[in-house]
Length: 375
Image 1 (cartoon, rainbow, N blue to C red):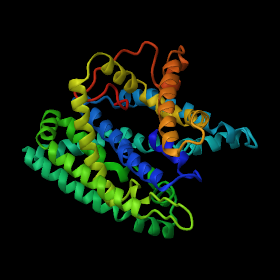
Image 2 (cartoon, one colour):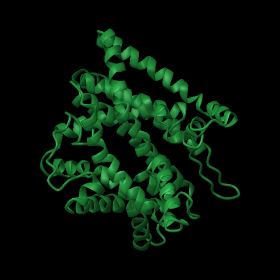
Image 3 (cartoon, rainbow, N blue to C red):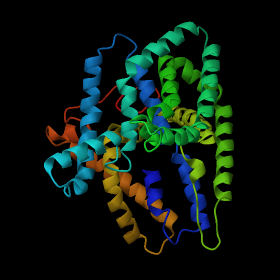
Image 4 (cartoon, helix red, strand yellow):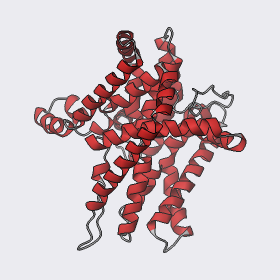
């Protein structure tokens, strides 16, 4: 939500160099969101499904909790375009295309990207379990993950050449997957899922490793943050007018990939600390936010429109950084509250939010917020 709040104000004509620097810092602090959710998805799946897997029931649960709400909100966001369709068949065809590609709204690409991990979960589980049976020590596991990280980061350097080659091939399905829809190609994000899967398969070892190597992880995070901040700010232009560019922070770049991997480690370690120290009201608030996070994500693009309008009304003539912060706070609160209210509607509530009225409080993975991404 913070990234999308920033996105709304990036093109404001009164954006200054100082606003650009603040936006850079905010983006760095929030850029880990998508990789972290992929990581949590892998962790929760492998933590919860270490025994026999009933694939049909597994998919049915994901369809009910994730797929149906996604389709519902895709229809809501696509409604203005669908109402202009020339006929029912054309409208249905258009909606299927938008839902399949995640183009009904700018933020739905993430759902399209994450769903293949659920569909192919048995394959991932078979591969990781077989590899794990051959890696008998934690030292070898760490070495294997570091080697895979190097391969993954190197793979980021091949995305642009693949893009250019795929344009020349002009092959159905493959060319769009490597070009127009590269940002939602699950294979380009596989390492975060595998990292989560390995962590969920050996959670105790994972948490102990983070405790031992916390200072090194934090040092890497702050060093990479400083480097990326310098790279981005150095690219700002002041003449003839202020122009700020943030291409160096795109997800599918080698340096960004390294930063995101380290960011996941920092975020999880911070989450461990919060889970161990939070009590009473704080724990309750965190549980509420995590409980309604998926529905809030789906609805937040709609809420952001109102949040930015309110922010501009409440803070007229104030710099865009403060308006962005207020818009983010308002959007987050409105999205969670709207999800809470919608989830209370009998029957339809589950269709819209993935949460039934009688949904019981889930049992969280140790060190994680409850039901973070519907694992």
